[in-house]
Image 1 (tube, rainbow, N blue to C red):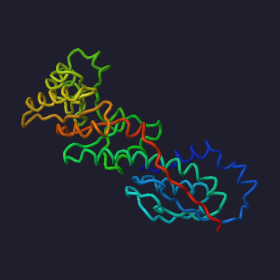
Image 2: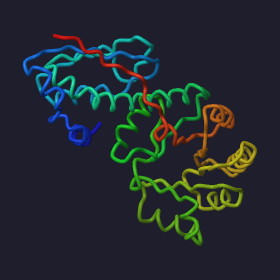
Image 3: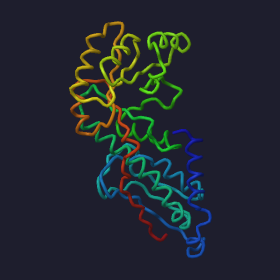
Image 4: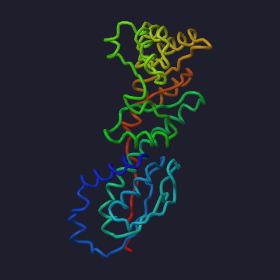
Amino acid sequence: MNINTKGTLISLALEEDGVFNDVTTKEFIPKDKQAKAVLIANKSGILCGTDIFMQVFKTIDERCETFLIMRDCSKLKQGDKILEVMGPAWAILSGERTALNFLQHMSGIATVTNKFVTSINNGKTKIYDTRKTIPGYRELAKYAVRCGGGTNHRTGLFDMVLIKDNHLKFIKNLTTETTAFRKKYINIPIEVECENINEVERALDAKVDVIMLDNTSFENTKTMINLIRNASTKKYKPEIEISGGVTPKTAKAFAKLDADRISIGMLTHSASALDLTLEITIG
């Protein structure tokens, strides 16, 4: 994770929660009181975000020390001890919620990603994320996807062309415009979203790098994949991506079609936070 991004997010989160103006700890917890806290998994899942979790406490008070028992990408089971935090009691109490918010969210993404990855288990098709992330949290979310065994799609609008249905309304000749683009940008891949046979044929004519089959039924997807495979040659073989409302059940079915990718928005926009608890003891 980028250090600057992480530091900025932590600072914003601590400011949002008013950590340095915590009236409860200010008025009820002695400044010199020391404490120890143990992070425990209440449910099974994939651990992700320990680095930013520990950095929250260091940002509040550099005297806080952490001892890591389990590392990111580890498989958790209920009752597992993940790490320990030691330091000023007020700092641990004030930072508990912010630290957990980061860790639970990231672990939730890693966990749901891993469920998709293990559900398809065909050795070829990879599970990809999308740009459907909480603003400002994309780097954390994409790291969590990788922890769960998934693969990252484009980072943003700058590192890959993705021509979607709304873009296509403005494009008269896809082949002409993609050819012109490649003369200007040699190393940027081009992907086109397709919902029917005609759009797939246009994408094939333009020789785009990735063809996304979006929101299509299983049978229509199968037909379009066959069309793409039959049109492929040694010199031109586009990657095939399936997307649109994919669930663990449908992902398993789609994977049987041997697509290269299945991209899933819910990995990052709908993942439930993993249930973790920070239990504090008096030092």
